[in-house]
Picture (cartoon, rainbow, N blue to C red):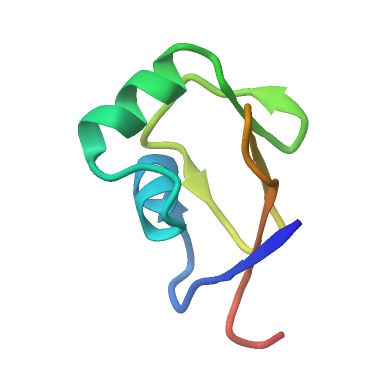
Amino acid sequence: MEIIEIKTEFIKLDQLLKFAGIVENGAVAKHIVLDGAVKVNDEVCIQRGKKIRPGDVVEIEGFESLKVIGEEH
């Protein structure tokens, strides 16, 4: 599991995918999310603007899971 540290209260799902280097741009992120290839906390998520907060775990088909942490960790 890869740890992703954010310095804000949340990050939107499509931005997280770009920040983590999973996708190159927002268009690719949109397709991956809308295709149902992303789970947030074990639930399929098709909202590319979903707010991901510290403690959330994001799973992307074919990639390592991402755990989001905040600065305090």
